[in-house]
Image (cartoon, rainbow, N blue to C red; front, top):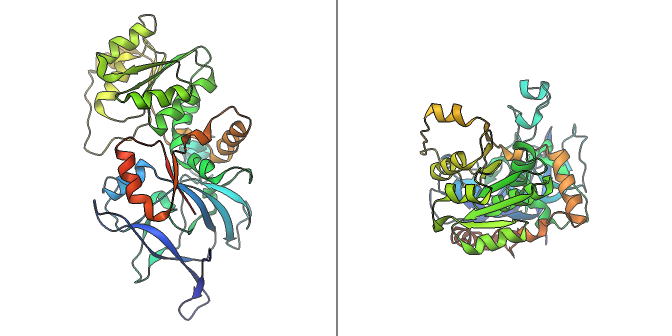
Length: 374
């Protein structure tokens, strides 16, 4: 397979013509189009994409649920090989196998200076633009745009991992798996002996189940409306399952935890109904973690006295509060040691032309992750 590069204009800028999946308008089917990707400038890296997972976030972009900056170059949950870097880049080099992350920390903002880089308030992306052949600027999903043969990112978005890792599995650390695992391990954090409930058992929720098990939870209850997804959750370490359509979720979670409620409840759905269930079901002084992403129209009302009276903590989890350079290699190591089933998240391997149908399968709940392999 070739990724041709051609010189354009009077300067010496090299532009790579590649195939990429583009969403041109709200709700419109995506299509594979020719994308022009420039060679990296200062602080940038050109990455040959090997694999990219089909994530709900990409569907949200297509549906206009993130913003309206169409057209979008979709894809962000990816692994690949660095082909070239800007003159000032030293952390990665051509030939490095990397997982792409969408929170390249700056090291300078107030969060970074306080030793909390996972909250970095000034994450950055590539400066140069990727375009269509007619010059139309593309908005890369989460600053990555990896449903393409090559993409241009900030060098800080490249996290080196063991080159022996299967890119179809390793790339999933770039979003959903890291978000769920980190919600349990980093954000909550789940402690040894805790009881945990996870609401929603898609890719993020199942990663939270696996994370809770890794952290030492003695009981992990998976909650979903789909019995098939509950069975998947058992495969990731859920000790108990609960079909949310079988009755009062809050009452049943309390009954399953000695009448008290779980120590930690992770909402991987992100709806007012599930968040309220999580808030009410947890034990006194328990923790709620919201990792499912609500849409902009959703609101929630909780009496302030209940917030005070229940105590504990209510947290949101941004990207699993991860540090990619710390957590991505760790999870690859755990996977290779047989301690984390990363490859089990890969339901099918597809091509760029199959992304639209993969969105449909995802909406029907038929897959954990479809992965585009290039």
